[in-house]
Amino acid sequence: MARAFAEISFTPAVLNIQKQQGSAHSYAKFLTPEAERGDHLTEAEKAFIAARDGFYQATISETGWPYVQFRGGPKGFLKTINDRTIAYADFRGNRQYVSTGNLTGIDKISLILMDYPNQRRLKIWGRAKLIEKEEDAELLSSLMIDGYRAMPERAVVITIEAFDWNCPRHIPQRLTLEELQPHILPLQKQIILLDEENKALKSQLGSAL
Image (cartoon, rainbow, N blue to C red; front, side, top):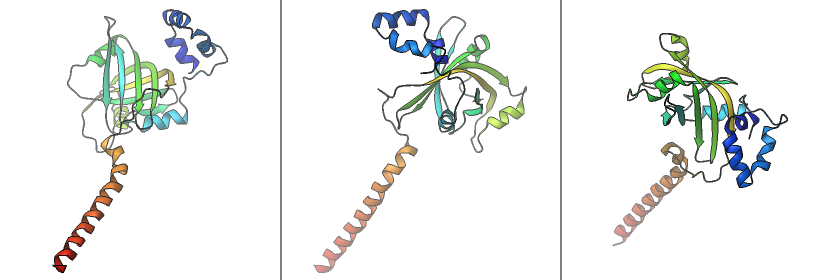
């Protein structure tokens, strides 16, 4: 855990619960000046972000309610601009604009990026800026993925305040069809060979009768 993340997430109420539950001592080291800051992406985080085809995003309404949604797209649609900035093209969806509306009032945003096959999870906290297509068409164009048919309405540019790699415990292993294919392919080939052998044996038996 990095200090930037601990400073944001360990509120007085959280620290009080940690004290009650006996975990305050083990987490205190993350709030010391010597602790790694953890608000600049390294090559490991950049590579992880580039490999994702979706993430969970949380925003806050002006009435104080959190709103969580899944944002999906082609692999790599969430792009790293620099070590403190990530961005994505906001594609047209059901046009409820809940996240968009929330971010116009409160710019705080939180992302959870999942790698289910390898049981890895990256949490990112930041502040989002909405940039409409008319404001910066060049930026929006740079965030698009060639061949992906979707209508971009704006860019969401996120300045990172903190990030943290979560413990892999309790993360279920799940695979998409694309991720499952390398495991299925050898079985498919084996089935084809067995089918051919079966046909050959039937042909031999038929000839012997």
